[in-house]
Image (tube, rainbow, N blue to C red; front, side):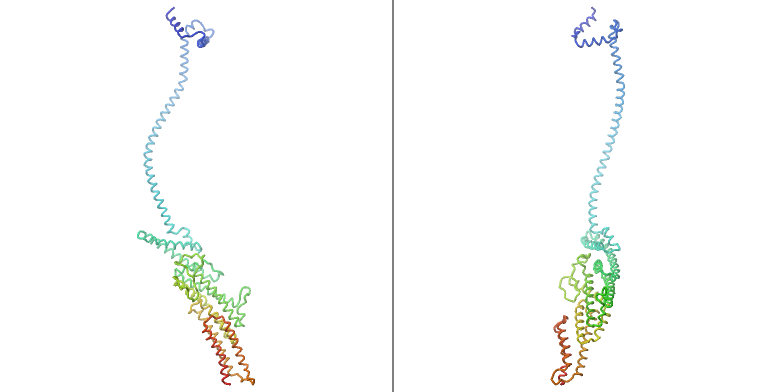
Length: 488
């Protein structure tokens, strides 16, 4: 046996493989199927090794051909990865550059943010300052529109409040700002008052045609007291309008009466002097009360008035009488307003002086009799006393009332003198039964009626003055009787 064969046999024996082992059985089955039936020859079996190697080589070629495509794809992946790596390097470089740039931007942003915070704080301060010391757009519109309403007075109140607040700015470090604001507001306030004056003047001209006066008019008029020149002009206009309205109302009461003839026209009572004079004075007394209330509203607005706080200092009660007011710290202002109101009231009633005097004198001088004339004197005294306290002592209304009172008194004493002269010349001697003559009985009855009228009189005067006036009346009746008694 050759050495090669021996080595192979030894190798087989050394492998410890048996013909019955599974691996051997599987290998032999594979080998039996290796050749087709017609190729399982001795020569082929001798070439088994080379065939196995050849098949192995073919198998390797198939594997190699299969992995060629994978290799190409991997080459592409490698190329893509290289490009991606390059791009990442570029991006990294760009990010580095951006990081450097961004750090500067962040620093600038932080600086700007700090400035923004400072500016916002300053803006809040400026906004608060402007809100306190500057008029809003709504206030400006309210002051510039043609309509005078509640918004106008609120805006005007805002100006006054700003002027008060500006006092805090009049300090060494803020004098310029405070003075600039004060100057600006002073110019605007001047324009506002001029506009208010025009509106009040126009409203005063048409007030006679209005059944009721708008409360805003009273507020606007009261505001003008702070501008004496405008205020005086408006007082003149208002007095003229109210005077014309009062004259029309008086003439309507005399000739037309009330609505639907109720009450009846006063001139219907011209045949009854006492009723006629009483109705005229009663109408005038009511008109004085109405106009007095109107004038009071001009100087003292109600609590709902828009000008409640526009005037400096507390409001005081206005008294349109000559009575002494209670002394207080505001006494000078009250007296000033009272005198001004009395002058306005007197100016309004000046238009009634002539028609009132003509009609009252006509009724008084008609000489209706001593008793009626004495009643007219009492009526004239009563209404003169009650109305004159609302007018200045030097006003034409007071002078007219005093003249009517004196005229009625003169008529009474003229009738007494005429009666005394007639009594002296027509008295008959006593009758045989010593009873008093008829003329003396008439005088005594007349004196009794006068005493009753005097006791019922509503005239408020001093006891001494009343006794002096009535004593003169009684003397004018008693003295002629005593003179006649002395003769007989």
